[in-house]
Length: 264
Image (cartoon, rainbow, N blue to C red):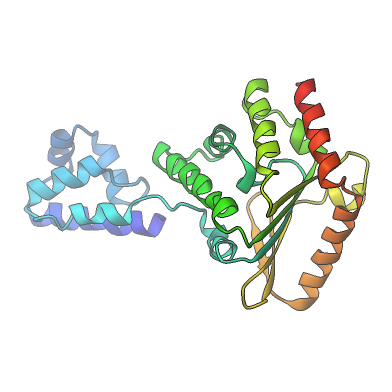
């Protein structure tokens, strides 16, 4: 996105200087400080729709600068996870283990809003809104793709990690129970103390496509990896199998979730 900001900002500068307009003049008309306009032109800050509109009018660009707005829209997913999202959208089977948070496909909107809005460094409001919207849209697959198998194993800590408020967590747990009733969705709980050597290492997602290609996705604080190599897929599949073997069955997991909800 930074490259896009730089390119659009440079276009504003080129049109402005070509029209003989100073930064001060453009800033005054758009109600921005000189340094703000400079930051946008240099790509350190996203050129705003207002600056593009005023610059287009003042420089006689005839819509050429306004056209940049389409390319400045925030990405629905972080760049490092976009390839995974494309595979997830076509998968015929998905097996997801999550140790600390509710899996994205199972999150309520308020839960997702809290997590995404508390990103660091902070995201702008438009990006937060777009990413929350995209996460909610992904969840349509649970009801739309009824022949796709969705299995989730959630560590107990994820159920007890307070996100937003007790009331919000209560609604999140209720959402898990409702979603778990879908015939193509299974939700299992791994109680604390079981399979600790693997349970605490981190999340993982195993996917199978319609062409029976297998992938594994793991994510950390600032990095993520999508694996297709058979040896790596085998290793992560064995780990997931061990975790799932120690998890409660679907029925006992639902009862466990109800109990945690009552304890909030």
